[in-house]
Length: 185
Image (cartoon, rainbow, N blue to C red; front, side):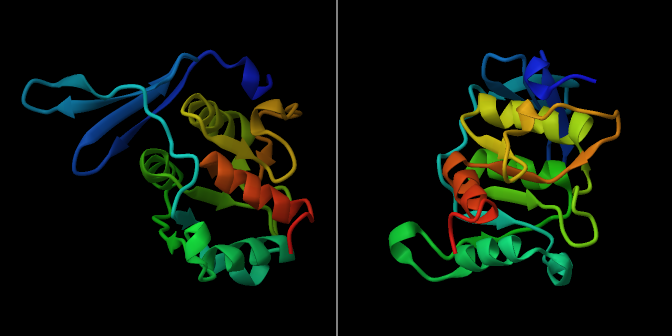
């Protein structure tokens, strides 16, 4: 039970029209795609860098009735028309943490699984869901937060500890933090 910043490696495998493995050992993020003809993974995405700002937000809007005011204000802001700031963002939610994260990692954007009125502490597990993805996104130039604190700096208290997660393009995560910290209306 250690802070996420003490990790030495993180990764995931995603299945879809192709199979891809993404990982970091603290020196960048690399993606490998499976060639099913020979059963080997080949480097297809060297040095993955997430755009500083995206155009996609990912959140389970089916939970909107339980969101906090901060979450409502943040998502409403992302949906507002403002061509100067690239809004509105497009809502894309697969419902799979890794799939939503992967799309945003490659294209930019923000994934939110915030705490809400039913689960103020969030639902995702800090040690084996939030921390590994936070390590990956930071190595790719993005950010991960619980709204108030960097995910990798959270001092874990339990193996299955839960936390809110806001992860993705750095500018998008900083914007969301401003809503959660009461610095934006």
